[in-house]
Length: 159
Image (cartoon, rainbow, N blue to C red; front, side):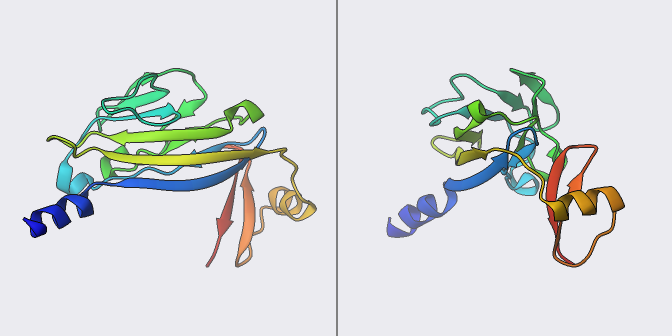
């Protein structure tokens, strides 16, 4: 019995993380699952704590192969769904986007769902002179932060 109890604890994910974003930019809230093991499964995102079943007011949802519902065009799943990357990207961040988000990965069977909670902090978005220089010249050096003008995001690049 203790082996079963240990297995249940190890396979259920109640993961918490923190993400900081800047107003006017895009931010990605991470959520991934083992697609090779579980296959394509339903995933939904919502604001606040995830209830016992499903999502109460989904922002975006997928069947594991394609996005099914979206509350706003500002919500995207830009990761590779086929690899289990169901991260939520919020476009053109506003201060009103700050708060707790939940990602529910529906794993078949009772009480198997993975729940990921992310606390998003939003700060006023100002590009530093280094970021502006890197954006305008398109040069990249080791350990730099670079702004993607197409997706309006900032990435940390390390080589």
